[in-house]
Amino acid sequence: MNLNRLQRQENSVGFDRSRRNFCLKMAGGLAGAMLAPTFVCRSFAGKPELQYIREARYYRKLDGKKIQCLLCPKSCVVSPGERGFCGVRENRDGVYQTLVYGRLCSINLDPIEKKPLFHFLPGTTAVSVATAGCNFRCKFCQNWNISQVKPEDISFDYLSPEALVGLTKSRQSPSIAFTYNEPTVFTEYILDTAALAKQRGVHSVMISNGFIQKQPLLNLCKVLSAIKIDFKAYSEKFYSDVVSGSMKPVLDTMVRIKEQGIWLEIVNLVIPTQNDDPNSLRELSRWVVNNLGTDTPVHFTRFHPQYRMNNLPPTPTRTLENAYEIAREAGIRYVYIGNVPQNQKENTYCHSCGNLLIERAGFSIDSNDIIDGKCGSCQTKIPGIWR
Image 1 (cartoon, rainbow, N blue to C red):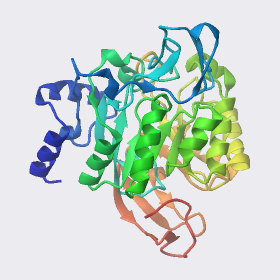
Image 2: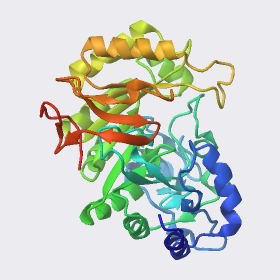
Image 3: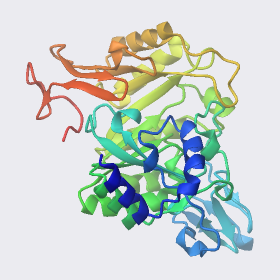
Protein backbone atom coordinates (compact mmCIF):
# COMPACT_ATOMS: atom_id res chain seq x y z
CA MET A 1 0.00 0.00 0.00
CA ASN A 2 1.38 3.40 -0.98
CA LEU A 3 2.05 5.32 2.23
CA ASN A 4 1.60 8.73 0.62
CA ARG A 5 -1.84 7.69 -0.56
CA LEU A 6 -2.54 6.18 2.85
CA GLN A 7 -1.62 9.45 4.56
CA ARG A 8 -3.92 11.41 2.26
CA GLN A 9 -6.73 9.01 3.13
CA GLU A 10 -6.00 9.46 6.82
CA ASN A 11 -6.29 13.20 6.43
CA SER A 12 -9.63 12.80 4.64
CA VAL A 13 -11.14 11.14 7.71
CA GLY A 14 -9.44 13.42 10.19
CA PHE A 15 -6.62 11.26 11.53
CA ASP A 16 -5.15 12.94 14.60
CA ARG A 17 -1.47 12.06 14.97
CA SER A 18 -1.51 13.09 18.61
CA ARG A 19 -3.75 10.07 19.19
CA ARG A 20 -1.39 7.61 17.51
CA ASN A 21 0.18 6.31 20.71
CA PHE A 22 -3.21 5.71 22.27
CA CYS A 23 -4.38 3.87 19.18
CA LEU A 24 -1.33 1.66 19.09
CA LYS A 25 -1.80 0.83 22.77
CA MET A 26 -5.40 -0.11 22.04
CA ALA A 27 -4.30 -2.21 19.10
CA GLY A 28 -2.36 -4.49 21.42
CA GLY A 29 -5.61 -5.68 22.94
CA LEU A 30 -7.19 -6.17 19.54
CA ALA A 31 -5.01 -9.03 18.37
CA GLY A 32 -2.54 -6.63 16.72
CA ALA A 33 -2.64 -4.09 13.93
CA MET A 34 -1.71 -4.98 10.38
CA LEU A 35 -0.76 -1.39 9.53
CA ALA A 36 -0.56 1.05 12.42
CA PRO A 37 -1.48 4.10 10.28
CA THR A 38 -4.85 2.54 9.43
CA PHE A 39 -6.11 3.35 12.92
CA VAL A 40 -8.37 6.37 13.12
CA CYS A 41 -9.02 7.55 16.66
CA ARG A 42 -10.20 10.95 17.74
CA SER A 43 -12.43 12.43 20.41
CA PHE A 44 -15.22 14.80 19.46
CA ALA A 45 -15.10 17.11 22.47
CA GLY A 46 -17.58 19.92 21.99
CA LYS A 47 -19.16 18.37 18.89
CA PRO A 48 -22.92 17.69 18.75
CA GLU A 49 -23.98 14.30 20.07
CA LEU A 50 -26.37 14.02 17.14
CA GLN A 51 -23.55 12.44 15.16
CA TYR A 52 -23.42 9.26 17.18
CA ILE A 53 -26.58 9.20 19.32
CA ARG A 54 -29.66 7.89 17.50
CA GLU A 55 -32.94 6.32 18.49
CA ALA A 56 -32.60 2.56 18.80
CA ARG A 57 -34.58 0.35 16.45
CA TYR A 58 -35.51 -2.57 18.66
CA TYR A 59 -37.45 -1.72 21.83
CA ARG A 60 -40.95 -1.18 23.14
CA LYS A 61 -42.27 1.45 25.49
CA LEU A 62 -43.64 0.52 28.92
CA ASP A 63 -45.50 2.43 31.62
CA GLY A 64 -43.66 5.12 33.55
CA LYS A 65 -41.39 5.87 30.57
CA LYS A 66 -39.63 2.56 31.03
CA ILE A 67 -38.62 0.64 27.92
CA GLN A 68 -37.90 -3.00 27.13
CA CYS A 69 -35.01 -3.69 24.77
CA LEU A 70 -35.79 -6.19 22.02
CA LEU A 71 -32.31 -6.47 20.55
CA CYS A 72 -30.73 -9.35 22.47
CA PRO A 73 -32.22 -12.16 24.59
CA LYS A 74 -31.51 -10.33 27.84
CA SER A 75 -34.58 -8.18 27.01
CA CYS A 76 -33.49 -5.50 29.48
CA VAL A 77 -36.19 -3.39 31.12
CA VAL A 78 -34.61 0.05 31.46
CA SER A 79 -35.84 2.97 33.53
CA PRO A 80 -35.34 6.60 32.43
CA GLY A 81 -31.74 7.69 32.79
CA GLU A 82 -30.41 4.14 32.92
CA ARG A 83 -28.68 1.88 30.40
CA GLY A 84 -29.09 -1.69 29.29
CA PHE A 85 -26.68 -4.49 30.20
CA CYS A 86 -24.50 -3.67 27.17
CA GLY A 87 -23.77 -0.19 28.51
CA VAL A 88 -24.22 1.57 25.17
CA ARG A 89 -28.02 1.96 24.94
CA GLU A 90 -29.75 4.44 27.24
CA ASN A 91 -33.32 5.34 28.13
CA ARG A 92 -33.62 9.10 27.69
CA ASP A 93 -37.03 10.24 28.88
CA GLY A 94 -38.78 7.14 27.53
CA VAL A 95 -36.89 7.01 24.23
CA TYR A 96 -34.22 4.30 23.88
CA GLN A 97 -31.05 5.67 22.33
CA THR A 98 -27.93 4.03 20.98
CA LEU A 99 -24.84 5.94 22.09
CA VAL A 100 -22.44 4.35 19.57
CA TYR A 101 -23.81 4.99 16.08
CA GLY A 102 -20.56 5.35 14.11
CA ARG A 103 -18.67 6.00 17.35
CA LEU A 104 -15.71 3.85 16.39
CA CYS A 105 -12.90 3.20 18.85
CA SER A 106 -11.00 0.97 16.44
CA ILE A 107 -10.52 0.96 12.67
CA ASN A 108 -8.02 -1.48 11.26
CA LEU A 109 -7.14 -3.16 7.99
CA ASP A 110 -7.09 -6.91 8.70
CA PRO A 111 -6.57 -10.06 6.65
CA ILE A 112 -9.89 -11.87 6.46
CA GLU A 113 -8.13 -14.95 7.87
CA LYS A 114 -7.74 -13.09 11.18
CA LYS A 115 -11.50 -13.15 11.85
CA PRO A 116 -11.10 -16.12 11.19
CA LEU A 117 -13.07 -16.68 8.00
CA PHE A 118 -11.31 -19.35 5.95
CA HIS A 119 -13.95 -19.99 3.27
CA PHE A 120 -14.69 -16.35 2.47
CA LEU A 121 -12.53 -14.48 -0.06
CA PRO A 122 -9.23 -15.96 1.18
CA GLY A 123 -6.20 -13.72 0.90
CA THR A 124 -8.22 -10.49 0.96
CA THR A 125 -8.54 -7.77 3.58
CA ALA A 126 -11.41 -6.31 5.59
CA VAL A 127 -11.67 -2.84 7.06
CA SER A 128 -12.46 -3.86 10.63
CA VAL A 129 -14.35 -1.60 13.03
CA ALA A 130 -15.60 -1.69 16.61
CA THR A 131 -17.33 0.41 19.23
CA ALA A 132 -17.40 0.08 23.01
CA GLY A 133 -19.81 -2.35 24.68
CA CYS A 134 -20.91 -5.98 24.76
CA ASN A 135 -23.91 -8.03 25.87
CA PHE A 136 -21.64 -10.71 27.42
CA ARG A 137 -19.15 -10.58 30.29
CA CYS A 138 -16.65 -13.21 29.16
CA LYS A 139 -14.03 -13.73 31.85
CA PHE A 140 -11.49 -14.58 29.14
CA CYS A 141 -12.26 -11.65 26.81
CA GLN A 142 -9.27 -10.63 24.69
CA ASN A 143 -10.79 -7.23 23.87
CA TRP A 144 -12.02 -6.32 27.33
CA ASN A 145 -10.48 -2.85 27.07
CA ILE A 146 -13.19 -1.86 24.60
CA SER A 147 -15.98 -4.38 25.15
CA GLN A 148 -16.20 -3.89 28.91
CA VAL A 149 -16.01 -0.09 29.07
CA LYS A 150 -18.48 2.74 28.65
CA PRO A 151 -18.32 4.60 25.32
CA GLU A 152 -17.48 7.88 27.07
CA ASP A 153 -14.41 6.28 28.66
CA ILE A 154 -12.58 5.53 25.42
CA SER A 155 -11.22 7.61 22.57
CA PHE A 156 -13.15 7.35 19.31
CA ASP A 157 -13.73 8.70 15.86
CA TYR A 158 -17.11 9.27 14.29
CA LEU A 159 -17.50 7.85 10.78
CA SER A 160 -20.80 7.96 8.95
CA PRO A 161 -21.80 4.89 6.92
CA GLU A 162 -20.89 6.85 3.78
CA ALA A 163 -17.42 7.64 5.15
CA LEU A 164 -16.73 4.03 6.18
CA VAL A 165 -17.81 2.62 2.84
CA GLY A 166 -15.75 5.27 1.07
CA LEU A 167 -12.73 4.46 3.22
CA THR A 168 -13.11 0.76 2.40
CA LYS A 169 -13.31 1.46 -1.32
CA SER A 170 -10.24 3.71 -1.12
CA ARG A 171 -8.28 0.87 0.55
CA GLN A 172 -9.36 -1.39 -2.32
CA SER A 173 -10.66 -3.81 0.28
CA PRO A 174 -13.65 -5.99 -0.67
CA SER A 175 -15.15 -6.20 2.82
CA ILE A 176 -16.07 -4.39 6.00
CA ALA A 177 -15.89 -6.44 9.20
CA PHE A 178 -17.88 -5.52 12.29
CA THR A 179 -15.77 -7.11 14.99
CA TYR A 180 -13.60 -6.89 18.15
CA ASN A 181 -16.45 -6.02 20.56
CA GLU A 182 -19.95 -7.48 20.10
CA PRO A 183 -21.42 -5.92 16.94
CA THR A 184 -24.99 -6.66 18.03
CA VAL A 185 -24.81 -3.64 20.34
CA PHE A 186 -24.33 -1.29 17.36
CA THR A 187 -26.82 -2.99 15.06
CA GLU A 188 -28.31 0.28 13.77
CA TYR A 189 -24.96 1.36 12.35
CA ILE A 190 -24.33 -2.07 10.82
CA LEU A 191 -27.72 -2.08 9.08
CA ASP A 192 -27.18 1.32 7.50
CA THR A 193 -23.53 0.75 6.60
CA ALA A 194 -23.92 -2.76 5.23
CA ALA A 195 -26.94 -1.76 3.11
CA LEU A 196 -24.94 1.08 1.55
CA ALA A 197 -21.88 -1.14 1.14
CA LYS A 198 -23.95 -3.76 -0.66
CA GLN A 199 -25.18 -1.13 -3.12
CA ARG A 200 -21.57 -0.19 -3.85
CA GLY A 201 -20.27 -3.73 -4.28
CA VAL A 202 -18.63 -4.09 -0.85
CA HIS A 203 -19.22 -7.13 1.35
CA SER A 204 -20.03 -6.87 5.06
CA VAL A 205 -19.21 -9.56 7.61
CA MET A 206 -20.04 -9.77 11.30
CA ILE A 207 -17.93 -11.43 13.99
CA SER A 208 -20.44 -12.13 16.74
CA ASN A 209 -21.28 -14.11 19.86
CA GLY A 210 -24.68 -14.88 18.30
CA PHE A 211 -26.66 -13.60 21.29
CA ILE A 212 -29.33 -11.70 19.39
CA GLN A 213 -33.10 -11.84 18.98
CA LYS A 214 -34.73 -13.19 15.84
CA GLN A 215 -35.95 -10.03 14.08
CA PRO A 216 -32.73 -8.01 14.34
CA LEU A 217 -30.81 -11.05 13.10
CA LEU A 218 -33.11 -11.54 10.10
CA ASN A 219 -32.73 -7.88 9.19
CA LEU A 220 -28.95 -8.16 9.41
CA CYS A 221 -28.97 -11.24 7.21
CA LYS A 222 -30.47 -9.13 4.41
CA VAL A 223 -27.31 -7.03 4.17
CA LEU A 224 -24.48 -9.29 5.41
CA SER A 225 -22.44 -11.71 3.31
CA ALA A 226 -20.95 -13.83 6.10
CA ILE A 227 -21.12 -14.28 9.88
CA LYS A 228 -18.65 -15.92 12.18
CA ILE A 229 -20.04 -17.06 15.52
CA ASP A 230 -17.82 -17.34 18.58
CA PHE A 231 -19.52 -20.32 20.19
CA LYS A 232 -18.34 -20.43 23.79
CA ALA A 233 -19.15 -24.00 24.86
CA TYR A 234 -21.80 -26.66 24.47
CA SER A 235 -22.84 -26.05 28.07
CA GLU A 236 -25.54 -23.87 29.57
CA LYS A 237 -23.57 -23.79 32.82
CA PHE A 238 -20.51 -22.38 31.05
CA TYR A 239 -22.62 -19.73 29.36
CA SER A 240 -24.19 -18.77 32.68
CA ASP A 241 -21.08 -18.86 34.89
CA VAL A 242 -18.34 -17.68 32.55
CA VAL A 243 -19.96 -15.33 30.02
CA SER A 244 -23.19 -14.19 31.76
CA GLY A 245 -25.37 -15.42 28.93
CA SER A 246 -27.23 -18.50 27.76
CA MET A 247 -26.54 -21.08 25.07
CA LYS A 248 -29.95 -21.82 23.53
CA PRO A 249 -30.38 -18.43 21.83
CA VAL A 250 -26.95 -18.81 20.22
CA LEU A 251 -27.88 -22.23 18.83
CA ASP A 252 -31.07 -20.71 17.43
CA THR A 253 -29.07 -17.89 15.86
CA MET A 254 -26.79 -20.28 13.99
CA VAL A 255 -29.73 -22.25 12.62
CA ARG A 256 -31.38 -19.03 11.41
CA ILE A 257 -28.19 -17.83 9.74
CA LYS A 258 -27.95 -21.10 7.85
CA GLU A 259 -31.63 -20.94 6.89
CA GLN A 260 -31.09 -17.44 5.46
CA GLY A 261 -28.29 -18.67 3.21
CA ILE A 262 -25.59 -16.53 4.84
CA TRP A 263 -22.10 -18.01 4.91
CA LEU A 264 -21.39 -19.23 8.45
CA GLU A 265 -18.24 -20.32 10.25
CA ILE A 266 -17.92 -21.24 13.93
CA VAL A 267 -15.06 -20.72 16.36
CA ASN A 268 -14.76 -22.48 19.69
CA LEU A 269 -12.05 -21.15 21.99
CA VAL A 270 -10.94 -24.24 23.92
CA ILE A 271 -10.12 -23.34 27.52
CA PRO A 272 -8.34 -25.86 29.76
CA THR A 273 -10.57 -27.29 32.54
CA GLN A 274 -13.47 -25.07 31.42
CA ASN A 275 -14.88 -26.31 28.10
CA ASP A 276 -12.37 -28.89 26.88
CA ASP A 277 -14.26 -32.00 28.00
CA PRO A 278 -14.31 -34.49 25.08
CA ASN A 279 -17.98 -35.30 25.64
CA SER A 280 -18.91 -31.63 25.35
CA LEU A 281 -16.83 -31.26 22.19
CA ARG A 282 -18.49 -34.38 20.80
CA GLU A 283 -21.96 -32.97 21.54
CA LEU A 284 -21.03 -29.70 19.84
CA SER A 285 -19.77 -31.53 16.75
CA ARG A 286 -22.86 -33.70 16.49
CA TRP A 287 -25.09 -30.67 16.90
CA VAL A 288 -23.29 -28.90 14.04
CA VAL A 289 -23.69 -31.91 11.74
CA ASN A 290 -27.37 -32.39 12.59
CA ASN A 291 -28.40 -28.73 12.49
CA LEU A 292 -25.95 -26.88 10.24
CA GLY A 293 -24.56 -29.58 8.00
CA THR A 294 -21.18 -31.15 7.41
CA ASP A 295 -19.93 -28.24 5.26
CA THR A 296 -20.00 -25.67 8.07
CA PRO A 297 -16.36 -24.93 9.03
CA VAL A 298 -15.50 -25.25 12.72
CA HIS A 299 -12.36 -23.68 14.20
CA PHE A 300 -10.93 -24.83 17.52
CA THR A 301 -8.60 -22.13 18.78
CA ARG A 302 -5.99 -21.98 21.50
CA PHE A 303 -6.68 -20.05 24.70
CA HIS A 304 -4.06 -17.72 26.14
CA PRO A 305 -4.43 -16.47 29.74
CA GLN A 306 -5.84 -12.94 29.97
CA TYR A 307 -8.38 -10.64 31.60
CA ARG A 308 -9.97 -12.56 34.51
CA MET A 309 -8.60 -15.98 33.57
CA ASN A 310 -4.89 -15.40 34.06
CA ASN A 311 -4.69 -18.39 36.37
CA LEU A 312 -5.15 -20.95 33.60
CA PRO A 313 -2.46 -22.31 31.27
CA PRO A 314 -2.57 -22.00 27.47
CA THR A 315 -4.45 -24.78 25.73
CA PRO A 316 -2.18 -27.77 25.00
CA THR A 317 -1.83 -28.45 21.30
CA ARG A 318 -2.84 -32.05 21.93
CA THR A 319 -6.20 -30.90 23.33
CA LEU A 320 -6.89 -28.99 20.11
CA GLU A 321 -5.84 -31.97 18.02
CA ASN A 322 -8.25 -34.16 19.99
CA ALA A 323 -11.03 -31.65 19.32
CA TYR A 324 -10.10 -31.73 15.64
CA GLU A 325 -10.34 -35.53 15.53
CA ILE A 326 -13.65 -35.53 17.41
CA ALA A 327 -15.17 -33.10 14.93
CA ARG A 328 -13.85 -35.01 11.93
CA GLU A 329 -15.19 -38.29 13.32
CA ALA A 330 -18.59 -36.64 13.74
CA GLY A 331 -18.57 -35.86 10.02
CA ILE A 332 -17.57 -32.19 9.83
CA ARG A 333 -15.61 -31.83 6.60
CA TYR A 334 -13.75 -28.61 7.34
CA VAL A 335 -12.17 -28.43 10.78
CA TYR A 336 -9.34 -26.10 11.75
CA ILE A 337 -6.94 -25.47 14.62
CA GLY A 338 -6.13 -21.84 15.39
CA ASN A 339 -3.56 -19.85 17.38
CA VAL A 340 -0.99 -22.63 16.93
CA PRO A 341 1.77 -21.45 14.56
CA GLN A 342 2.80 -23.67 11.66
CA ASN A 343 0.12 -26.29 12.25
CA GLN A 344 -1.00 -28.05 9.10
CA LYS A 345 -4.53 -28.22 10.44
CA GLU A 346 -4.99 -24.55 9.58
CA ASN A 347 -4.84 -25.54 5.89
CA THR A 348 -7.88 -26.37 3.76
CA TYR A 349 -8.06 -29.78 2.09
CA CYS A 350 -10.59 -31.06 -0.43
CA HIS A 351 -13.17 -33.19 1.35
CA SER A 352 -13.39 -35.44 -1.69
CA CYS A 353 -9.82 -36.17 -2.82
CA GLY A 354 -7.73 -34.72 0.01
CA ASN A 355 -5.92 -32.25 -2.25
CA LEU A 356 -4.24 -29.34 -0.44
CA LEU A 357 -6.45 -26.42 -1.46
CA ILE A 358 -5.27 -23.50 0.66
CA GLU A 359 -1.95 -23.50 2.47
CA ARG A 360 -1.80 -20.96 5.29
CA ALA A 361 1.01 -19.50 7.38
CA GLY A 362 -0.62 -17.51 10.13
CA PHE A 363 -2.84 -14.94 8.41
CA SER A 364 -1.08 -15.34 5.04
CA ILE A 365 -2.02 -17.53 2.09
CA ASP A 366 0.95 -19.39 0.60
CA SER A 367 -1.02 -21.21 -2.09
CA ASN A 368 -4.61 -21.51 -3.31
CA ASP A 369 -5.78 -24.34 -5.58
CA ILE A 370 -9.48 -23.45 -5.54
CA ILE A 371 -10.46 -22.55 -9.10
CA ASP A 372 -13.92 -21.11 -9.74
CA GLY A 373 -15.04 -22.50 -6.40
CA LYS A 374 -13.83 -26.01 -7.20
CA CYS A 375 -10.94 -28.25 -6.22
CA GLY A 376 -8.12 -27.76 -8.72
CA SER A 377 -7.50 -31.52 -8.72
CA CYS A 378 -10.87 -33.33 -8.77
CA GLN A 379 -13.24 -30.40 -9.60
CA THR A 380 -15.39 -31.02 -6.52
CA LYS A 381 -17.31 -27.90 -5.48
CA ILE A 382 -15.86 -26.44 -2.28
CA PRO A 383 -18.35 -24.76 0.07
CA GLY A 384 -17.68 -21.06 0.62
CA ILE A 385 -17.57 -17.66 -1.09
CA TRP A 386 -14.45 -17.54 -3.23
CA ARG A 387 -14.78 -14.45 -5.42
